[in-house]
Image 1: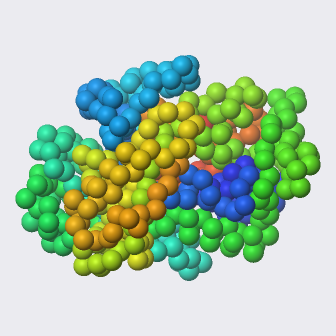
Image 2: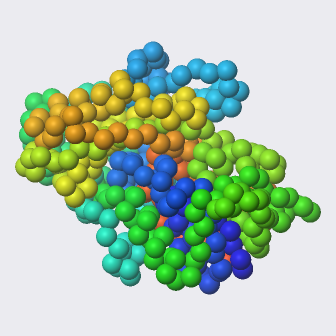
Image 3: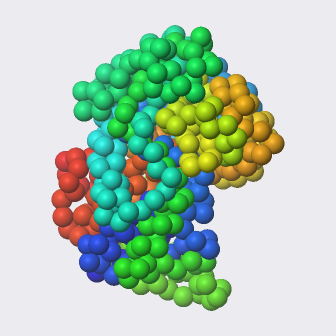
Length: 420
């Protein structure tokens, strides 16, 4: 079939890779000058099967109240006269119940485990390089209450086959010596040795080049205007082309992988998606003292920050700001990321050398992405991955390619439009 993939972030690019490998004629439409120029550009770098507890969990409402009004809060909710924001927020609170949160976590672990296996297969087959490290991910806690709360999710993940070990401060420093400076503050940690880290931008651009060399077509600088619907099916995508002229791009199947932009485009053809942008920040620092920089990827639970070593750089990313589609950098939030980094790893870099970035994560209330068939016959969804787009990209792309090809996905997941 002729398959039109809308979006060349890591989600759209991996889908295009697998669709092309399945024998389809693939065209990718992307408004930027290259792949991975938006949400996939500067994330935290973690491939984290173990970090699957949804933001919507039983402790979230209390934390939201505690953080309300704080500019440097890990989760900042800016109230707007926006019905979509209020509707999403209400559904988020409903998803915080213990049973629903646990069910969603199980789904995320299943998809994450499958996706990491798919990524490793791509790496073996292609030799693609992206500053990857296979040293695991450690989530550390400086609050005893938060550490105690983490024990139950860790147990659920172990039951799902994810070896998320509970460790004490001595073991933390043994695994990652760069944590020695804050050892007195540690309540404990969890560690998953099978998790990985890497530069999502390098991976996505490299995979796009490989797919293009195998006859997938990437059209950059193309702005999608609307989907054309007739007879219950999509008959084309109206775009402003590379030259600015309007044209209609036609295919047999259409894949929506536009992140936060997916919601409006889908709504125009009668498909409602509960996606709202959660702005995430990152800082990238050059590593000036290699001994003081972690090589194990880390998650700071109290500050909701992820740390990944990407070659000679240290990437720190996290926080979430619910403030519509605003991409402006908030200096307070940027400075708080670097300040926390230097509290943990003094002397690792010079704060004046930090480069900052913000991206809009396409977040659903319960953290589960939309993957599979939509209510429109030939429109397929691969969007809404929130903070786990890098972790879930390869598995989502492979499963979607199987669905488009009329096959049953290899992984058991809550796919759209499929009976379980």
